[in-house]
Image (cartoon, rainbow, N blue to C red; front, top):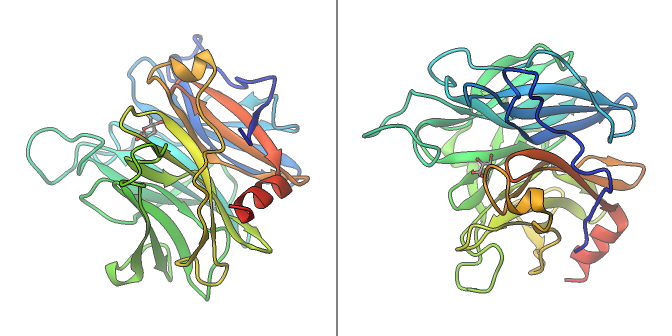
Length: 308
Ligand code: BMA
């Protein structure tokens, strides 16, 4: 596999001494800013509700965590938890995409992750600790795994989001209004290819990487057996609605015990791939239980995608 586990993995574990991160820490967003790695991770404790914790590191491997979460439920729209943060910075302002899981929904029965109980949310911060909620991208559908591009494209903010089981591209002038006419289907699972690792569903990982060849995306998918793997995709820089390459081969798969077991089996799930000194740092949740790190040289990843 192209991505190699860092030998220190898993690099962050649940804290049995805490009430909100007792059981699971996973799926972190990470941004490298002013020489430090800033991590926002999903944590589940005694009430099994996801909160967003913060940790900081000089080397990306050893972390100092804040005692309290930086984001937690505040009303019925997110009372069941805040999940899977992805972070960008534009002009000194940080934006976090996260999934709110709540009780507010339109439909019959109880809300579930696969229904109207989730909202793909965007929040903003100027200091990484206090966050203001801007609002959701869409309402009333199974839509998550949303991630902003790290700069405006032709004057508008651009975002990838997953309308199950496909990935869509969307544009907005202000991050609050996302119009249906500014959205388009980008790619979907390889449904006709029964041997494909991404045969059932696909979604985005971390923030798209701007390279000379195009936007480099690391993405995820799963098959009928619900085994999560990562792949890579290259999009046109000025028109990310155009796919340049989509290799068939996966670049990472669950192999370690803490990826094959955990709270949910056979899961590697990533919301972060910052590049520092030409190395791609892929942070990911293993088994929805702990946080791992896998890396590769940016050049190698580009060569892999271009040679597909
Ligand atoms: C997805 C998300 C992730 C999770 C994954 C595997 O739908 O909810 O947070 O890691 O399922 O359980």
